[in-house]
Length: 251
Image (cartoon, rainbow, N blue to C red):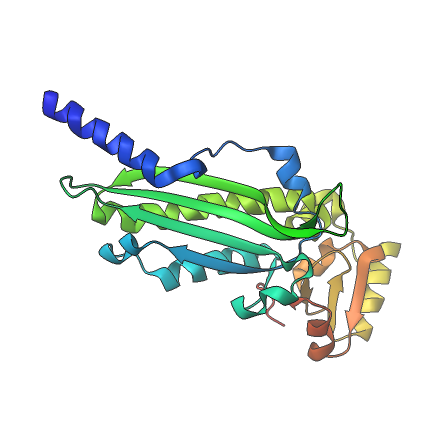
């Protein structure tokens, strides 16, 4: 009993040491959601501690999974070296810290997902600095085999939280914003005729409020409000508009 108590105490102390000041995962919903408004282009940076090398975690897979998750939500991701070109220099940073006490069989890991952007000081508007405006942390421990499953799973949950807040701050940018049946307009209605006319004139179509473009025959086009429907004559033109191909129709 005394040995177990000692081991538990060491685990707790080591976890606190590893987490530092980032272990508080409480969400300040209103401020962090507001900070994501209009941040439609960003980079993704993954930083891993040396302890990750002692696990079976694949750093490249971790980053690619997060990028894919964000892109599927309609968020445009730039290559890391182009971070300075993103409006507001927006960066989603992912931190993976792993520590293994020498006399224990468990790994302690701290995950952090945080959003960094350039902001202006309220009292000195001309002074601009990089600031963390959204963050979420996760602290746990487990065996080496357990980490291989738990770390990617927990990072997915954390990224989902970021996407949820992003969509709340940018409701018109979310592909899900037009998925309700009430937004579907029959093709035979006057609004449907408008949609049909636009679709017939252009090779690609999209909503003004979406980062995704479609072929005119895509079922997702039926969910676009005709007032927001826009058309493009070439793929170069639509890509220059900052839009990505639909994953359903694959135009």
